[in-house]
Image (tube, rainbow, N blue to C red):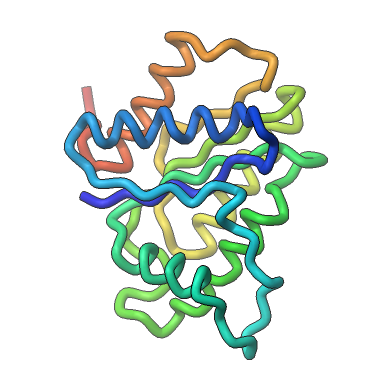
Length: 174
């Protein structure tokens, strides 16, 4: 299994990126290979269908084509996905002619972190909607938390369940 993590915020001490890194570390512990594209790695030109790709965009698309699953983690910016993450996901449009197209067949874990729970919840819904629109399968377990909330056992339980679902290791029925 190969899992790509996309997200975080450009802030130095990003709670969003810390959670994403924690999830990718758990995926590695469970035997997956991972790749992180942090917000700082997503400084791509604004998406335009007819624009030449930078080497960074080409690398991003190559790794998405190669991955078996994804974990998306976004800070809540005014109740929505960060611009860098949304712009990066817009580039998935260039995978429309792939076989399979877009993110088809891949489980996508979705995580949102906001200063308040309402913004995080709205951002989580937006992430899931984008994953679904790109033909990915949003994992049933999702995580939205306040950046003021401590990273504790409750957060880890949800995060690690998301990771297991992305890896296809979570039981469907109990």
